[in-house]
Amino acid sequence: MSSASTLAAPPQRVLVVDPDAQTRALYERSFTSAGLDVVHAADGREALTKALVHPPSLVVMELRLPLIDGFALCEILRRDLATIRTPILTVTAETRPVQLERIRRLGADEVLVKPVPLDVLAARVVDLVAASDDSGQNRDLALRGNRLGLPNAERPSVQVEQRSRTAKAKTRREVTLAPPLHPPALSCPTCNRALAYQCSHIGGVSDRHPEQWDYFSCSACGGFQYRQRTRKLRHLDESEEHWLRRQRASDV
Image (cartoon, rainbow, N blue to C red; front, side, top):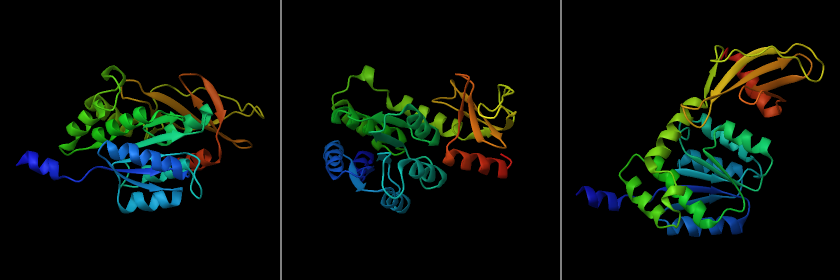
């Protein structure tokens, strides 16, 4: 009876978001052949509506989207209770490291740079869906993923991936005024004024390897981020400064 209910369960839904119709069609054929249900959107606004009305098991998205770009879409999905734990796989033509790091900070579970072989992409999609699935379908999906061509050594198990997602969901949102590492005294690289410490962000790929980012502000030049691991200071862009202002307003 248990086996019959598992077989009768509807396929997991993947939301594909890409402005290119041919890319969407390629993804749909590949993911459908892996036993997944696919819905797609050509822009960020359409994707947001579909994701919030019928939350998918996974979002596969490009960063360069009309109306609402991938960065804003990811941030909104991570704030909404309906999609806060939905895996987000970014497959993008964007190659600038600062932008790829930015989408990771906003909550993307994995970032792949195009071109990505379809068999590799389908295997990662199946793994992420299986890891997020709390029903009995995850084992069946993992077996399908094994048939897509990637050796086991190149593919994390469902159990490991699920632990990783849980850790990321916990660590990427930990904002504190009492971080593990003391924030350094820094000066603005533009005007040489002393930077004022605002808060710290603790995150990373797992709870065993957390990272610390410290946030500062300059009265004349805006917000800055200091990465403890690399000891690098960089200026925040407009969306990141908005995030920093929200943290200050809520007193973290």
